[in-house]
Image (cartoon, rainbow, N blue to C red):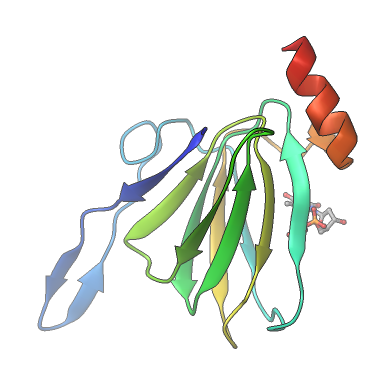
Length: 133
Ligand code: TYD
């Protein structure tokens, strides 16, 4: 499956912790966009789409949530609960997020600017697209 956990290096001392994140170094692409998801509700589901080309790294800055990842053949759940264990999601992966803990904050680093045309929002179209890849 086209996803993996990225372990960031933590610089911690008696003052607290610091995690540097550099494009093309700590994550495998140039960062063109950053967005945040917060004020989520525990009983909602987000996502439910795939991307034709976009790569993303999701960093859970606070709280926790669960990602359901599906490559059309297999699916796997990944629980995000700490900022030093981020989730890389490559192209052609159907994803949804649920089980948000109260007050969770996600920061998402993206390889491209926002482009709605690059989203696949229909699951059957996602499966069809995989056949022609
Ligand atoms: P949406 O795709 O529904 O979020 P999620 O993947 O968490 O379900 O996005 C919500 C709204 O935000 C939608 O109107 C599109 C807009 N948006 C942007 O304008 N820029 C962005 O970078 C993103 C991710 C979303």
